[in-house]
Amino acid sequence: AIIALIIIIILAVIIAYVTIRRRNVMTNLLDIITMFPYIVPGSILGISLLVAFNKKPLLLSGTAFIMILAFAIRRLPYTIRSSAAIIHQIGTNTEEAAISLGASNVKTFSKITLPLMLPGVISGAILSWITIITELSTSIILYTAKTKTMTIAIYT
Image 1: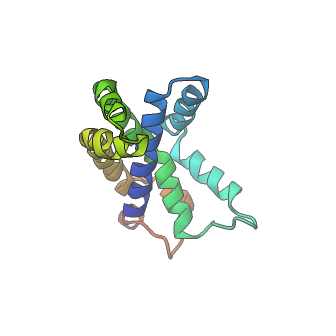
Image 2: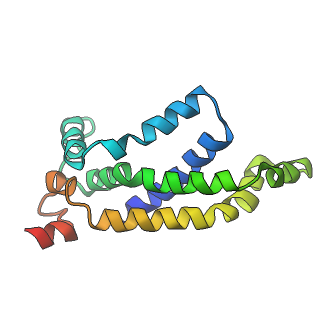
């Protein structure tokens, strides 16, 4: 769950920033695609991952990596929405001021935008973590004896 959460946080911050600050057709499409896990049932996601990664060259079925991938895909929208909501509240004038004073885009993001985003990112990460550790529908399809999760152990 921790590895999936780290992946979720990194991807959510990047995706939320890009979809809010760089509005165009591609970012709108990215926003729509990243919200698909809301409407896809966990069992369908698990079956899809098994079908996709059950043959070489990407033979991942039965490994912990496929569980991490499934958890990250399934719970990414929670942190994206929370991060996007906080970015909406952050005005662009502080970023523009930093850039006009000579700071690079990366330095502006890391020193100004990211610290202001932290409350939203943390709240989304907590929500994602809670739902990851209680995830059953995807886990029941993907688990093996080596990758048994706490939720599977409780219910079986």
